[in-house]
Image (cartoon, one colour):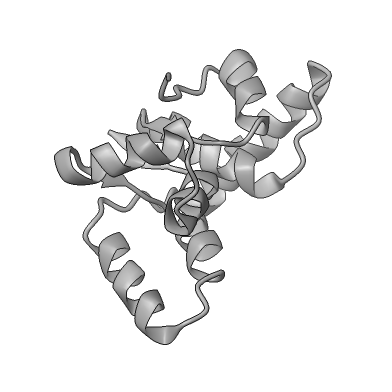
Length: 131
């Protein structure tokens, strides 16, 4: 199962052309797509209109939801962050490490458009959707 990061949702919703948005478009009609609270919050907070907000919320409601164990996921994410830092990798946003940790814990692939996840793939074994 694939979890789609907010970096892809934003491109898709804006109609911007990139292979990740094209892949999301394909997945929406053919596979179950997973989400988590962090991705939902990042995407929904940027929706300006109430009608579009509710439409998109309905799409998220239909997806398998992986909340992560709040305490356990936070500890695991902190360990991942520390491991990345020990490898010389500086991650720009803690939320990305939390999203990656949800994927790792639940054996989900991540469809993303954010270079911080590239290092997490290499160092942490995060599974990502390949081009």
